[in-house]
Each structure stands twice: as structure tokens, then as C-alpha cells.
Image 1 (cartoon, rainbow, N blue to C red):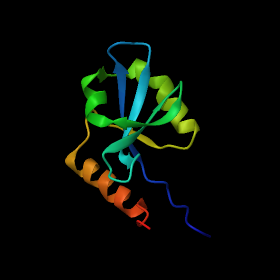
Image 2 (cartoon, one colour):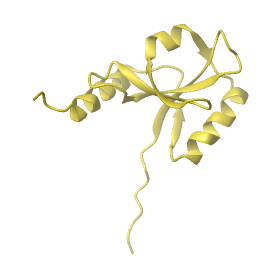
Image 3 (cartoon, rainbow, N blue to C red):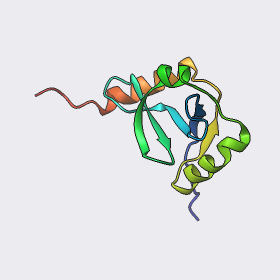
Image 4 (cartoon, one colour):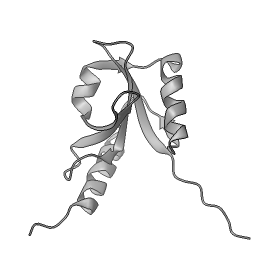
Length: 109
């Protein structure tokens, strides 16, 4: 009998834009969206996956309440994520993002 391995959890930060309180979005602080690891992956109902400047998003948004985050978290689970919600990115998360970005970088030709 083979042992099933669980997919690791996905650190996620759920925010609401200050300029549009109906627009809830997720930041994935450990998933790079560029080869330097400066941008992280984001997700929202409209537009779905995108790249995001973490610091800018934090400045322009506020933390989502549990009620505001509920639908987006359900959608993330439905598409295969195992979200673990954090309020802010930790230094370890930033390092993980940069490390993963370096692993994905293609050599210059």
C-alpha cells in the first residue's frame, strides 16, 4: 500500500483594495512571478492569476476580514491550492520566493 503524500501548504495573504472594497485578492509571497523574485504571484476572481508588486499591494490595500476572504479561499481550494493565511510576508517567505525564481531562471544565450 503506497503512502499518499500531502501537497505542501501555500502561504497566502488575503487583501482588499482600499480603492475598491469589493475586490478581494490573494498574494502568494513564496511564488515568484519574475526571474528575480521581486514580483510574486497574485490571484483574484476577475483576472485570476497575475504578477504583483508585494509592497505596493500592501500599501494600497487592507487585510481582508474572514467573511471577505471566504469566497476567494474556497475558489483557491477548488483550483488546487492548499492556502494557509498569513497577515504579512515573513523574511523566510521572501527568501523562498527569490530562491525559487533563481531556480527557474533560464541561462542567457
